[in-house]
Length: 149
Image (cartoon, rainbow, N blue to C red; front, side, top):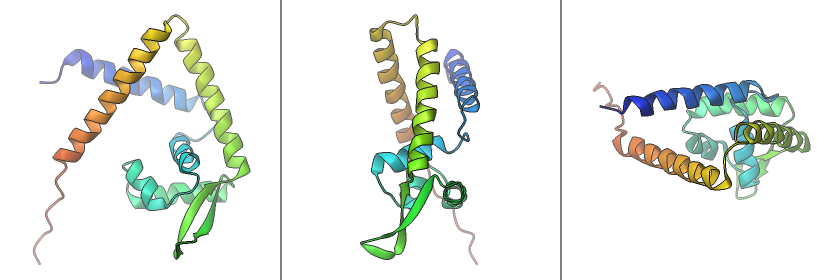
């Protein structure tokens, strides 16, 4: 059985993240996508879907909205003219920088009474936990069986 205190803590963390995202000017689902595009300088939609564990149709709708809003541009992939590469526009970089400044301010306020050692320990533990949980999920993921025709 899962540790009840850990599950309760996860619920509170998810609530806190939702509140942080809601207080941002950027739409909730786009900050991570914009950050991934900037981190990779240019990427394919299928790579974003895999990185964010999202269905390709979901990421496709997100990208279409970001292109429509002028935050992301599609360019032809020089290695495969049939594929598109996604890049942040100047506006996309500016908006992402504003979101990060907002997050930095909110996190700094929340962690004002924490020592740097506590912050470093928490960050490392959180990253380790997320990586282990993702790895466990990937190990236990079994594709659904196709119905025989």
